[in-house]
Amino acid sequence: MPKLKLLIILNIHATGRFLVETIFWLEVLCLAKIGFKFLSLMPCILILEIIALISIMSFSTINIAVFASGTGTNARNMMNYFRESSIKIALVVCNKPGAGVISVAEDHAVPVLMIQRDSFYTDESCLHQLRDYGIDWLVLAGFLWKIPSNLVKAFPGKIINIHPALLPKYGGKGMYGHHVHEAVIKAKETESGISIHFVDEVYDNGEMIEQAKCSIEEGDTAVTLAAKIQELEQALFPPAIEKVIKAKA
Ligand code: GRF
Image 1 (cartoon, rainbow, N blue to C red):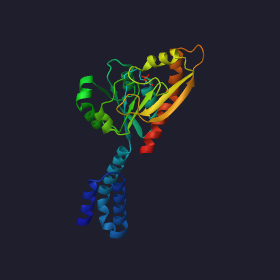
Image 2 (cartoon, helix red, strand yellow):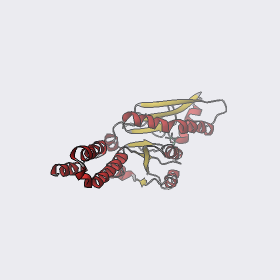
Image 3 (cartoon, protein in one colour):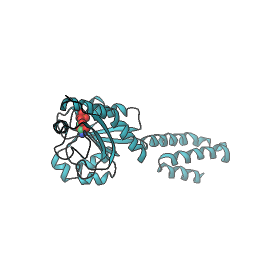
Image 4 (tube, rainbow, N blue to C red):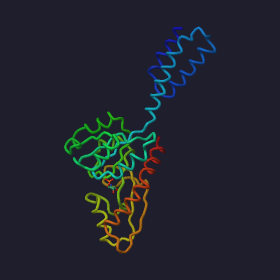
């Protein structure tokens, strides 16, 4: 009996699958080996089992923070795509008051963390907040500030960005939104596309995950090109994120 109590107490401190397995064997032990005199322990064991199952469910959820400061088309698409998934958009990080992505987050009941440039680059408050929200991955979708090295180090290989052109062309500081498409049209390119890549400490530089192309026809403008790019982003970005996260899980 004391041994049994000890085993239960020890396992209260465990989490996940190990705890469920141990409790399962405790049940078997109670019923089959020790005998039915310990049946009074069963409610207690069942409660532990429920706690363990809840802990498994929360431990297997992968939380993404979406960094965005634009209209939030990609953020909305991700929130819809991952609605029934074990991957969850748990936070939106935004530096631009009034940005469309804030109301997208509100529509989906996703909390928003507003950040200030000074503190983003000089202290650890953003990192602490990400930790408090249990964030596992960062996804940048229209976030124009460079990610500081403390975040790059804290999320190694776990920061993904989408860029609306075929990197390494048309990337780097100042190349965002319509600026990218205008530059592509001005250069008379015959194709453009999207680049989904890991983020390191240099703008638009990390290892490529996936690129997809669209053709540029005569008569295309920065506006019509933007629409083609958005179509690619909507179709390909969430599945690419899912693939990368599941491959590293
Ligand atoms: C997208 O085109 C993305 O490729 C780029 O920023 C834009 C964000 O748009 N990084 P939205 O805010 O998701 O509509």
